[in-house]
Length: 376
Image 1 (cartoon, rainbow, N blue to C red):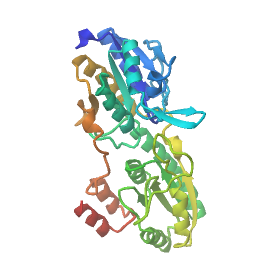
Image 2: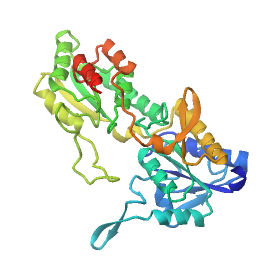
Image 3: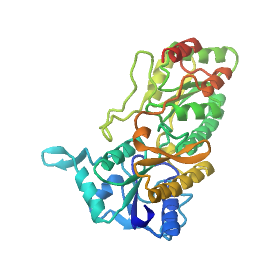
Image 4: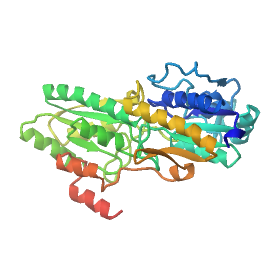
């Protein structure tokens, strides 16, 4: 397969995260050094294969010095789905399927294979384009860590560390003022960031989408701490968390990428707590800080390994596959399998057992959580 490849493309799609530049750097250098291939950088995700003037050559000089940089030198977007492409017209927003144009544009550019660095949304698009003839290899990227097939995605470790550092700082002010401080973190459907950062940051309550919370259980945890003399509590909540029998909280603004935007659970929770406990409650929303900044050593190394192996997969003809970390080795899994379902926090996880042992409230009683586990 390597002998038939002369030029590959690289794009970053969806939300940004630390480590994207490390993947780009590794892919470019490996393609040039190992196979003497040309590399084209596709700007702004799939938008670069829809709109003109968004493709540029990438050389070793172009990727020099980008390893520690956050974000992506190619730009990214979560609004350019070729199968559902929105265009502003005089009559309003019109939606078109421009996927055939994307495949033709890639052919005109002489792209023999495309490396797509993205989360479940971008990789799902890549898989659909593969069905139309585009040769694709995927690299899993998401701070949410919710992609199947890989133990972890790059960007997740840095996001957890950012959240943990925020919790370290919130502890001192919460204790000084005898307050309950709620930290709202990202996590639409999966609570990996909230759970791991909450445990690492010494949170007293951790609320995740997988376990609907009972506000009385949460308030009882806080009131018990007050009675025992702690006089402050730290609550970590994933943006997709919801109460028992209730729904997640969404922002009122326009939907993004075909989905309504989550946000506001922290303030909602604060209002609920004020009716159940006497402590003063404050809310901090970490937001996009979790996506920014220089990648951790773990993410730099993982992203670099992913980028290099992605190029090798192209050379080996393993198209339609995604690089993945399993048992400390970088392997490949089919993109179709990776995007078939999200990876949620399992209710029988040893991480949850750790939280129970530390007397961390997970939003509901241990008995209820174990019954949820037993019920599947």
